Length: 298
Length: 298
Image (cartoon, rainbow over the protein chains, first blue to last red):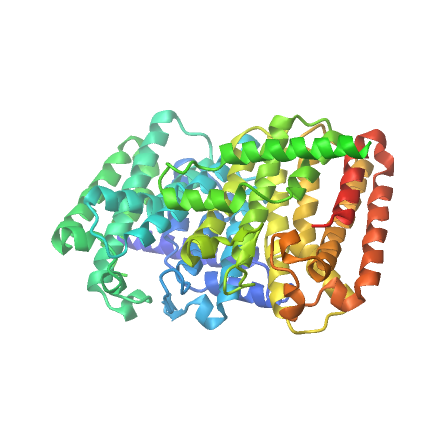
């Protein structure tokens, strides 16, 4: 796929997601209005939409229709958005800037930010249950299960808990990997598998390939995030740069150094490509997305 | 049903729920151990389990098996437990006592309490998706949807948001009712409807009766809570008494006075009984539960 074609596809999916999220979030005139306004502030008008892009690209593998994919991808993106709102709270990472704007608790207040995260979290599950997203309702229940396991105490929330406990400590590479597989990797994996589940069922080997791809991309995403946090500016990132090292958080850069972290990201990118080998042309978008995740500058 | 038989049934369901919740929550040796320990602290060893009782009693109407009901009831109870943990946080109600013990953020810390609530919230949905709970998977997806709508921004989280905004204000009775239908009523309604959905499908009129029952009991529960908050002691309640009036929160007692609030609870109890008229003997437990909710002293 040419780079221009891929860029155009990304732009289309991002625009479609903005419209879908805007439609699926309660309107600002629905009571309680302030909560709904703050939910929309937290979700709309920003973000790279990496998880929705992965969801759509995985849906291409199984021939899923965009009407299903935009709802499934919205569920995953709302789960991600809720985690950002809660992670930014003063009792967690205490951050004031996100996507180039004040974080929700700064723009509104802490109680509202807490409820915004809670309500987005619930809405994610509501979206997976309200409309037909898989050919078989039993498969759709599996989507709910996948998202729940990815987000829960043995997934994203658990990873955040390990992250908090590791601040100021030195981690080994396997410990760091364990943390990130939970904190970031689990939801990225769910985005890929849920996207694929919107279409026709995959055989076991194709599904295993997708899973391996998703794990590699999930880890690569975090490695690159750590490199960018160390090297890029706050203006470029739209969030506070250099925060991890100031907060004494272990990162791939603190454990491996920048050069080896970059080499690891490159290895994971190659592994992601290799995992797609059995899918042929159907995996082309996912391959381009692996490149995008690793080669991005923000 | 005799009072002794009802008491024995309550004790059995409560004991069954304690075992089920203990089994369904991750063990304290599963990583991240501190998070899992705190989740268990938040859920186990206390609480009247009103929502599970309603779930089981509604399951009797449709002949649901206890193996399904205990999982469905656990999902509803975890959703309730998460809301308590978040509501007790300093940025919300800032409470230090719950079920006679220090609240989660006091016993652990704020960040852990935030994640405990988040992880319980996710686990609730996981439970509704992991095992077969309804005869038809499409009906089980409806359970997920029911729970999500009950818990989200147009349900429990929305009610909490209205509650925060109303502190220090005088509300009219309809405004107060609107708040509590969302904050407490929605999840109680979900407990009843989800319990019933674990068995054979109900006809439209029986379902409408259950729904009317659930709404009356949900509101009665809150009216009685407000009366108890004004009249009972902290020791009896196991949570800080008299807090609502000190925090300037509108309650049924502040709006109606104690005598009229008690009369309203009695009216709602009668309405709950009337709503069960079409169910005959199958509604006996639900009828006793309506009495329990209104006549309880803690």
